Image (cartoon, rainbow, N blue to C red; front, side):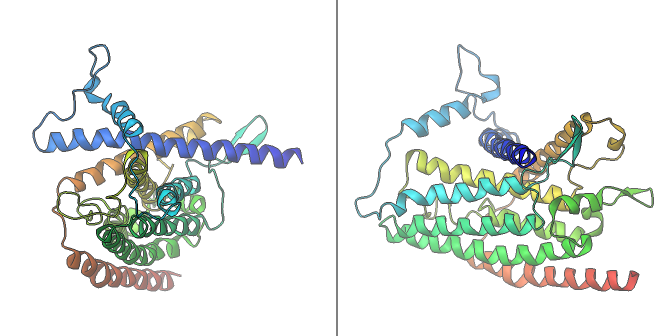
Length: 351
């Protein structure tokens, strides 16, 4: 009984840590997006907010944004269908945040004579848990458009649902290749499968054995997070989005959801293609410092992936909607199925 309580308490602590990790990175990304775009476009970027004259590269804009969203009038359209209108942003954000609990931030560590897992929810089918919760977020997007009392928001919600569903299908088929290679649906086991050197030359990371799947996953992940160049559901300057009738913190929850999804997709890419917590030479560290180093390595890789996604966000132009759907169904899906076929054939030939 005591053992069960200890393990439950430890998992609960790790889940809170994973949620805090995702939300803090999401807040930081709101600043990174401005400063990184400014560097690309030869501008200074956000730097006006200050506290006692200190600006610190515009980092206080994170606090200013939060205060603005909390103090802004929470307007609800008279024809909105409550409480569904209120539930929609919480549903989308909640599903994305819970997905973070499936990420393996590190391997098991030994401390105080006991083994502790650094994966918040050590599930045997963690990838299915993450993708299933991620797909539930579509309901929040459609609910927001349908319950706002606006025909334009409804069209935006349907457009977003069509995009997210089409790229979720492609994402599942893309991940089938590396998962077939690792022979498991457990994300921690997938990392352990990559935690060695191939012929003592290169790390056995998925990106070296599944390079096509990695590129396809980046494309599908960017579309799933509704970020540029796949930001048609939200293109405020040209298109009416699904959250047009939202304001205040409810609007902020939708915005935060996009950043949290970006963190989640970066975590999945690190787990399945970049060796997760593995780094050559790291295994020689003593316990429990090895676990802390693994968490640091995993977090650093996630930040590197976020930087890459931000580069894509400010480099590529926006697709037309027909181009977006054509890319998902006519390019990504066939290529992912071809990658799975080649992977299965290669494993059978080598066995």
